[in-house]
Image (spheres, rainbow, N blue to C red):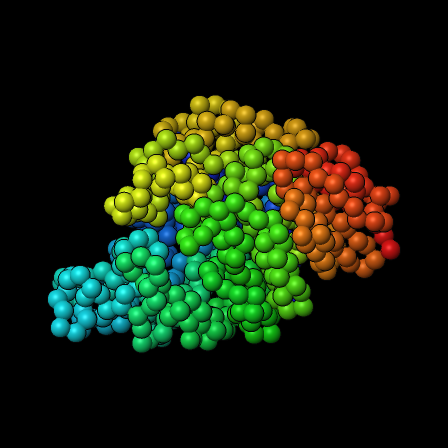
Length: 555
């Protein structure tokens, strides 16, 4: 089996914010093409594009109105073909974002579905009448008590046909009914169309939500929330494995060199072993969310400090659980997460380097989100009027309406809003960071005058140079990609330490994840070779604040 992705590194581009070629303030495909040398110089193997399909942009392009075209804001299919050819010419692969749990409400499939209860595509989505004896739109008349992920109920009344449709996300993102074989075949045909065009695989958005319990039972209501958590009925639903195996047979079988990644909120290690077992023919790896939920309480907006010991327990469990079957994906940042250097670091280049070292030396395929390799930080949001993300805007409105002080809500948004990841890429110190000659759709972080690609390009001590070396290690030191994993110092509150071993070569990774010096003693390593370090010092002993070291010895 061709498992090239075990030694690969993936780079995610959020197209609206990467590079704008025409000055309209929105990034585009030609802009991405113009910056591909940045990716090849970094050494990454795969470019993952967040959605570039036609979309009303209610949810940043994850509300798709046409699966087989390019949104005019990003360019044309000809521009896409040119970008794909340029990616391949540099020896890289291109991964598309597959969003098939839901469509836009402007997709022709949904337009047909909502046109009449008798339309052939009516059953392509989840339609239900109001609760017995209740009127459409009346409080509590929704078919179930589920809440959506973007605040409010998960059911939207539709006056034209007198029923509700299900939307786990925005009301403009109706959920597809994967129990309908016509839906599945239409999706598979679309996927084959992109693969025939030359793309190299898919990152599959919330793919473990496509199978719902057809009974659609009410969910559990938790403290004070107006709507229930219905996830027991749609996370890893009853036919999910069947659907993924059918997709593999119908779309991927017989095509070599592809990569399939399933984004799966709520997935467990035990689930992931099944999803990523090559013998089962489902997906190559999954995105899990356990580690990025460690600094929250009841919701993501309920802020908590990270306990490094809990991070060790979580990542260590995933390393052990997928050691013999399946594969890990490794990430800190993406379009849905705030910047890690602000979240769990102090915003400094040293913190950026050490957090990168910690992640990239684990066993799995690392994902770099645009700007992460520069140490880009969260934006200093002044007020709610600066935010664009539907999740953030809706949460602010709902929380303030419920009586939470506005400044308290803003504090959580500043820390966790998805908009933190979506501010423009910082290419240079010019007024709009080299992203655009126009007015950017989201503001440029004012720290771009010092945190930018141009300033770091020739600096061997930069965050960018450190990422290059990390990626080179994965490509050239087999223990990084293939070695086993052993967690050390599980109770240390500041130092994250582990070993990787493969064919007589052993690596020791030491990361001080704190702003205070930390003593560390791992016997037998003082004479080991320093492969990579933030401070140029080897051995064990004391680690400076935010210092990391990767040591190598041979048995």
